[in-house]
Length: 406
Image 1: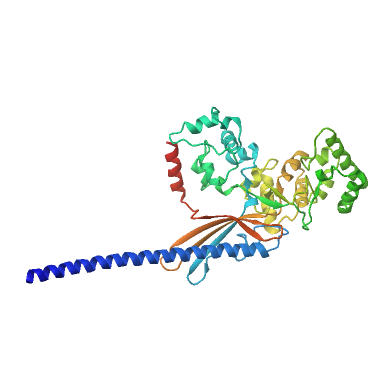
Image 2: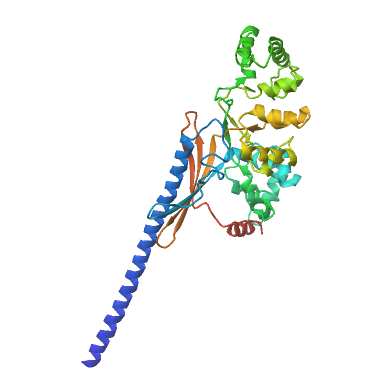
């Protein structure tokens, strides 16, 4: 009987220990799930706070000194305590980066320093013949140990660049001495096609079906302070000449060669005119928020010009394209530099990337959210895309890419 009693006690003790361990595991799992949920809600709170700031801020110009920017007196990236935990937010102006889906070979070469990589990026996004079966690009990707196909369409995420022929983790993520493409490019960038006062710009090509009198009246009503009636007639004649040969204005710089306007007059009106009257334009780079490396990579730019813009905007953001144009003229830049640079830049932004990290107070569990937000015509920032747990450590991405290519 004693032996049976001892065995019973041992069995009950073992069972109690097992139950205790199981209960402990369940409690830890429940606590972890609670903390992950709390951290996710904290991250969502950060996204919503950033959206509210984008909604109520002044939209006449976008700069790094804005309430969403890193140079604001109380920047968003500082931790904010909500009792259950904290969140930190970073807002990135997508128009402060070069749009990888619209960048030219020259721009990509200036960023990467490698003509072949620049060409491979363009091949990845463009549905050309080389990307099809039998083409050189198609054969390269299919010959990899773990083969895959190029998208042959617009990049959907910057991470795709790691799959492009010739791309390296150092070039993508950067080094201690230089930023990487991940900090210089975007897959989408949108800005309002309006002047410094918020008025829609005059679309030169939108007057093709008008008569000369109506065109002249519209031009003089807006630009009469900078142009003469003769100037308006010259712009009209330039439009007629281009139409006669089946062309139209493709660059604002044509006002210099086609319409015969002086560079001073072009600089004075360039914030009020555009190629067309679309409300939004894509691919323009905001001179007030772009990193130095982005400004220097734009065709027509230089490290000296980029550095001067960065110095000027630190004191006072550039509020109009006319300010940018006059800056180029003050530097005695040739007409071709003005032509190349001014067509690629803006002073406003309508698309932003919001990165938010929520951290639960107990246990320190963190959750990451990244949202692509577009500020619509009425100023309301609408979330167009949201990603969870986007912050994959670079070394893990490098391992994944290495597995694909080895």
